[in-house]
Image (tube, rainbow, N blue to C red; front, top):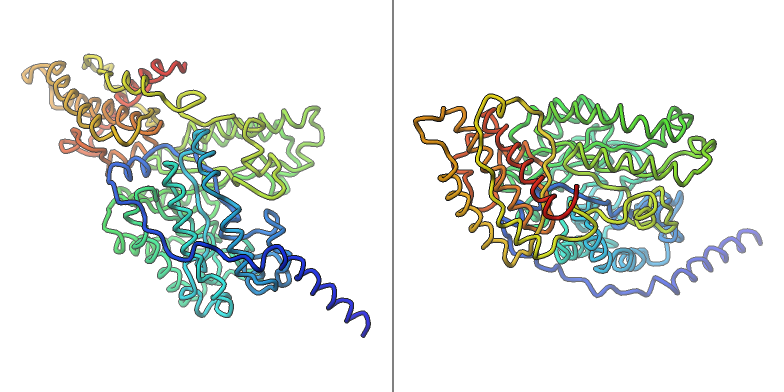
Length: 547
């Protein structure tokens, strides 16, 4: 009996200590803020550009290994969000203080200052508020989340202030898509694909997200599920969920992100078959979770990235309209992988830089996991990896944002007269095209000015109609728009066009020749577009001084 009383005293003391620090906290954010007004040009830039991104993990979906202090008063087994909500010490106050302090406007300002232009924001269905927790493991603790959606909206708006786009990722779905603690539950049971009730609830969550976020200019898309188990039902569910998004959001090119359940080739075929729908395959790349990962030396992992992984990404690029991102990756290697390295720090840096180079070169986006954790190690914590295992900045053209002087010169660029010959029409595989920056206040004016000047230039460099074939005219039109598109992205915030193939299907940035675009089915137009994009990239690189 005495032992039991001592145990109760210890638990009460622990909760009291935590309560003194956290349980009296009252958030000042209880009303949902309005989103920024919708701007179609701004939204298109955010959704089609090359993504330099980080994950904001353990902000709205808690993981014990990342933020152990938040779990101090959690219920057993103290491994998932639901355990915090069922714990002591006023879990609502604990979570709201975490939401208010873990990541702030200063963090977004810092990310923008080093060239990060996108964040992936993991949320759970409980983050939408108590109504979405009915008939789920969060039902009895739903009141803990009465201000959760207010904080999600605030997070998106903080990113907006810093010109950062947000991919809203449904990390935890009703029933759990994978049984993992990072889906919010601690039972280990993945019930989403065996329960029609949970599937319907998840579709309701998706519908709400699509209707609320469709016209938010800095929302670059919605991710349907994070790391679902590779169920036979997954593609059918993705099709249903995509249809829900398309019904709830009237914008035909609002991006939908689909994790491939770690089956790269299966989902290459599925996503490519959805074209021209703006669906994006999300693949996660880690090297610490299998026995093979554990025994392979760090240098071999680096070589694998530079060879096998690069080849896989190149293969996907041929299959997809270049709609494959690496939505999670890290610098982490196992102790066994590092044990024979004479310089572990250098080995980690080589491995990490090889990944960064491959994912930046061969995909339209990659997102490091994760921005922040309490024990901020360079393996998993972006804040510590920057200028350690990763570069010091992530701008497309150099170590800082493009200046107004650069922007003026980019605005004045003219394409060289095209020499339309068979050598100019050699088939090329699409690759990412690189571009650069300017402020929104002058962007519209410059976009229209560029379009006007390009039309004059088009008339002056085109061959007489009697001397140019329809095929060569198609190539020339594509080249012209590719060059102009590069400039338009370049004049906005250091951006590059990332989703090249998708843009040819569905994209448009302001006034351009897109009204005459024959689409991605026109092979010569497509090749001309990519070549014009590349040529403009080279010219912009010369202006900025990058080789």
